[in-house]
Amino acid sequence: MFRTTMTVAFGFALLALGACGGEDDPGSKSAGQGSKSPQEAGPHNCDVMSATKPCTTDPDPCGLNSGYEGDEYCLLPPDPEEGIQIHFGPKDYKNLDEVRPYLLAPGGETNAYGVARIPLTEDRWYNRVEIRMRPGSHHLINSLMQGEHPEGFSPPGSGCPAASIGGFAGTQNLVYNSMPNGKTAPENVGLGSKISGNTSLCVNHHGYNLSGTTERLREVWINVYFVPEHEVKQRSIPVMVNAGPWQPILPQTQHALTYTATVKGEGRFLSLFGHRHAHTERFAVWHNDNLIYDSWEWEESIVFPYNTLIKNPPLATEERKDGALSGIIDIKEGDQIKIQCDINNTSNNTLTFRNELMTGEMCILFGSSVGATVRAGIGSGS
Image (cartoon, rainbow, N blue to C red; front, top):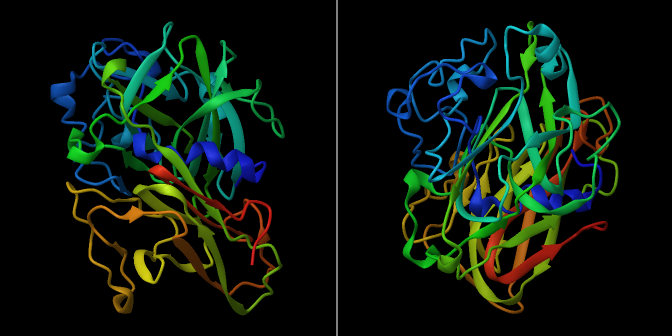
């Protein structure tokens, strides 16, 4: 999934401030979008942080009529006074020369890098992000680069065209909302991050079309909502615990990958989610001896927030259902955060730490915190 394990730290770690998007001019028809107003397209709000399905029943809320699977995931840009939209994808769906670089053939899988323009000429602060990706998207890792660069996918085998100057929200979910329904939990008032003007977004997109019979379009929309700089009093800290696998997992065997990180500092979790591939049946997280996160669906590793506003589904391990503790989870110096991935290699392939969904595996906890740092397992494991 990642060019290096350090690349991971940026894309998913800022999930406390996630996003959705398209073009920067809400009145334009660029990106093949129609002229529906935000009211016609329905609300951008969702009552969950992550989901597999759109938050509206409108089959084409942006009026794209692209001819490809996933038009229902598009969202119109925010009001220009409220924020911007970053779009990665073709601007004209009727121009095959422009569309072709974004297509993924049946049976294909690719982990590619590209560039999206950020329509900002001055520094701004933001506190809310929404992200939508078309079906067949496994992950999105973003980082910021200084200056403008040619948009679209980079040549195969290449990475970002310029050095990273910072991280930006990413996702492993087709639908991601950093602030469900646009409401801020009382304890999260004042959270914010900076996005610099005259920058571009380096996009690392992992797409797959393993069982498809038609081409899939790789496309991403990101909405970024501004907040005045003077209101920003808290900053999120990336969470990352990596359990590998660092040793090969042989065909037709089962293995539990584990890793324990020690908390540094004192604070609380904002959100957590477990990243893995097709042979990991369960991803679980413990805070000391307490189970706080339990996920059973590898294709859409659910993001659970920990605040006083949102109630998570209850833990239901015996029923093999996604669940988590609800409310604030305080963490302090010396606390132990353990992750475990239960891998059942039913294939005839030896699994190693690699990008491919069916022939590789990963067990990585991502998320964000305030005040305390939780990072371990980069480059080594149990």
